[in-house]
Length: 87
Image (cartoon, rainbow, N blue to C red; front, side, top):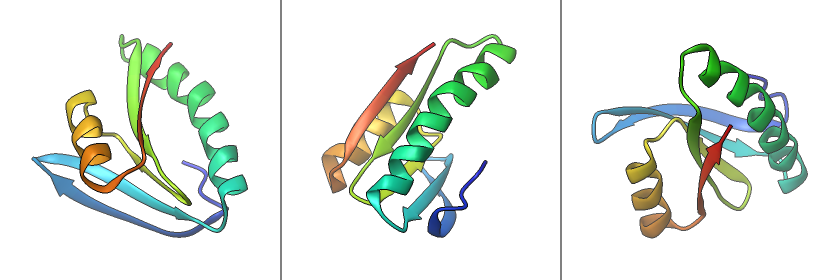
């Protein structure tokens, strides 16, 4: 994952799911990542026989790799938008 525009990257488990939290230098860097992950993410999930992936998009932060349910829960709890990408 290219996170060159990130201030910090961390990982944790929430409800037994491994997540990555990325804090961006600014929203332009976050937006660049969103564009990158939508194209690259679709290629990756298709390689594994999947057709969707999810992340949570916030102000200067993103959380990647949650399930759709957890993305919705995170968004409801701390803000941001649960993004459900169909490839």
